[in-house]
Image (cartoon, rainbow, N blue to C red; front, top):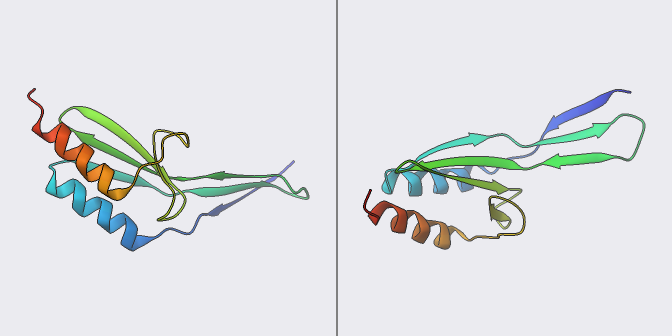
Length: 97
């Protein structure tokens, strides 16, 4: 059995928005490229979404996204918008350590 792996198309302008938002809130972000994994000679495939690890004040947030309209916090059950993410980062930034 052999597997086919190809990179998921990423949205550079969307990643730049997240990066700028993180820099304004003194957060560090690391982007991981998403992939499409398929089993050769079958119709079975798995989409691994893009991942963003955001670290702010010792706390770690994990964002996953497929495109600019599908952003999630931790897993696909918690959708979040860019505005909500900004509010969350500002709230964490203002918390006392």
